[in-house]
Length: 149
Image (cartoon, rainbow, N blue to C red; front, side, top):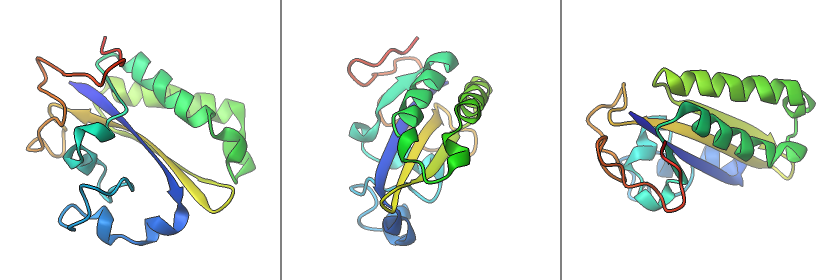
């Protein structure tokens, strides 16, 4: 089991257009917008994968870096709270360790939305039929520069 990391930062209005977010839509594979079903990230091209981890602590650390990089732009004061962010990252590590997906989303200033996801792979527990976009469980072909252990 490993997890792939994905982020998307874009117009909050793009989230309302659910066509390209559906796996059967002709634009789905090329669209970088968040899929409606989180496991469907695995159907996107391997180039969309921003990291691959077998170690839950490393995956959670990446998740935390992605979230903290945009904290100052979070619309909600509550979401900007450092303790709340630390708790969110800690929960992400626990969920990854148990083989779950981690999906985070925040509205940002300027009517933008940030999505940060860690998606379980090989197999995904709800969609085991979806193959790994970058390799197999035994021979993960990590994204260049990404630690896997």
